[in-house]
Image (cartoon, rainbow, N blue to C red; front, side):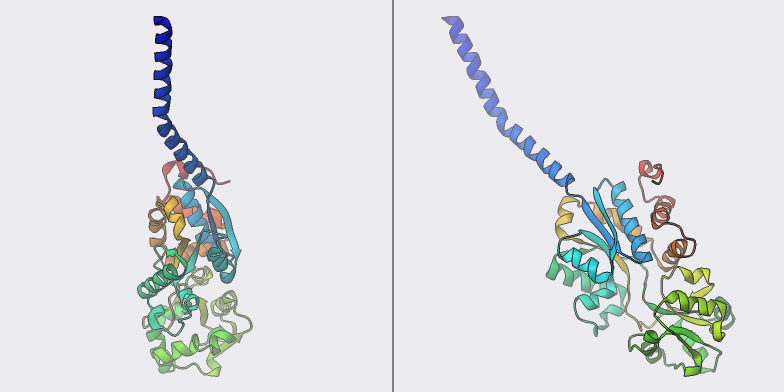
Length: 330
């Protein structure tokens, strides 16, 4: 009889212990389930289809992978409207955008705030979060907007470093001929804006208008002196500028909106991966105009893959963990 009671007591104790352990087991299972769910939802990283878009996308993608953030590669997705709509429609989670495009997203193109990197960044950050729950991260200290470049020979001979210097040179009848697209010459926000802000005018004989809007053609014209061109319409971080021995003149009075690249992502992604801003900030802080020109040059001029250029940059600047640095490129 005593043996039976002993068995019953042991069974009861075993039951009570199993019941007591149930909440802990459920909590552990719930945590494991959430972890599995999180790892099965990688960050969908996209980029625009152009050279710099591919480069920036690779920098983001490789940095996140090195930081143990699972990713899905959607790089070179398309033009601005395609990638932007994909983000708004929850088809992607993160991509690099330019602060200046905030003027078009928010339909405030007349606002002078876009001519300042800091003010423009603050404006689009606040607007995009309030309206779309999108978060803009650390921008790069670079400006990929319309600009004017001159040959290095002319810049050094006439001490041209800014557009104010160019205006002074033009106004004293300096020899100048600008290779540009018809859009650049005629659009109120392009050459006419530069001329208005800095107080100079190019006459018809000082313009070489090329069909299309391809800066590679304008850069080539200035570099080779085609029809006596010694200046070119460019984008500030064009990869061919340095290789063509041209110098971008600084827009010190803000004639153009600032197009600084920055990662943009959906807010809910930060809840799962709060380390993303800390991972990407050091990378974008290093991307000034000269650095981006050099990286773009490796892709555009030297023909190197964007993936390789990004990896080399990240490793050489010690922006990847050592274990990731030692992995060979696939």
